[in-house]
Length: 220
Image 1: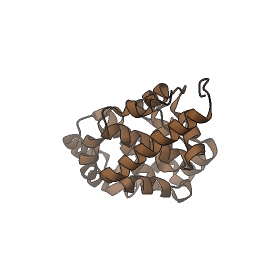
Image 2 (image 1 turned 135 degrees about the horizontal axis):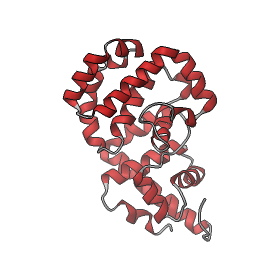
Image 3 (image 1 turned 45 degrees about the vertical axis):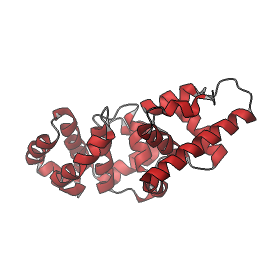
Image 4 (image 1 turned 30 degrees about the vertical axis):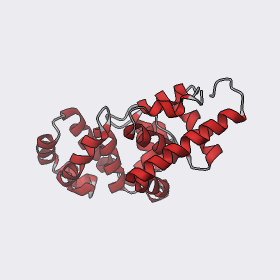
């Protein structure tokens, strides 16, 4: 929750900082990311997209996003462009060997294969039903998807949540909030963007500006 503050002035500073960040993100050429996030929906989630987003989140954990973005097309090729869990699991040995030549982190690559195995064993329909009924907590059953990364994956497949990314945690603190979720919820109510877009704008702005905390320092 937000710490004790005085009110409309804080909301004005918060909105102003957010719109400045959003303008920078769009001006720097990342407007398509906002468009993508706006279109993501749990109602259109299929097996291929779930495999792809799971792999993205696993590989991105603790890594520079720029590095993962460069190698992800090659990783996707190795994993048959996420065509199906069955084909990945059936070819797990070659997937593992080829993927490690691109990104030498056995734990992460094996986690991607384990998710494919899980989906292949139970069927994506069963997994999707569990995702829809149990929500974010269900995602933590998958390897390398922990309490924090589960929110990253959830956001990327259509849940209206914010992720506790290190950048958002820092912004929340300097803006006077206990956690990123409450920061993004408040901003969503103030500016009208959904919580996922608020999350994305703040995170992308933080990757573009080393002094990103200064923008929000007047808020707290």
